[in-house]
Length: 185
Image (cartoon, rainbow, N blue to C red; front, side, top):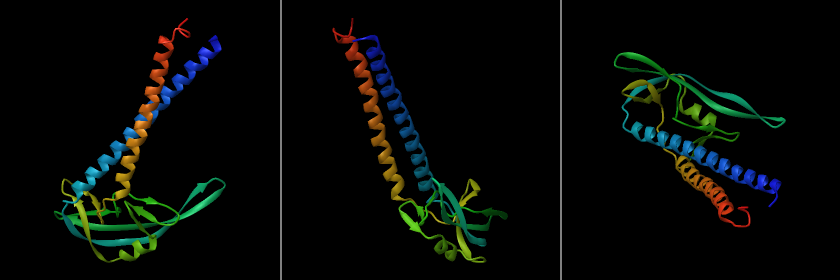
């Protein structure tokens, strides 16, 4: 094997190793974030609730660049006030985690239209507010644990295994080179 072929082979092995490690680390970080969210959502199921009042409720238009085009999306903006232990708090969170697409708002495995959400929370309406007893500023209007985050955690495990495969492939390529009598010269 010539020196340039050997350098090329080392470069490929190094690329496999680095790619595998980056994929594994990223997958583990995604998995850890999902696990923390799931844990918080489970704990929130036992949060106490109080009565709150909707102070602001409106559909907000947002845009995101998609190549040369702008993609317009609507998102519900709801503000509410509530009282815990004679102290007044204000909140804006409807759910723990959601994503906005051009078509709908996704919360776990459910989809909502922004105007549907705003209609559920008209200004002046009294609503249940779920709050963390240890930190009453931490509050939401709806408790949802969605299947999509569980699916994403399974995907992150599969991707981590693929990263491990790349790492093992790079390690076996390096050890094969060292033990191969033709290339060991």
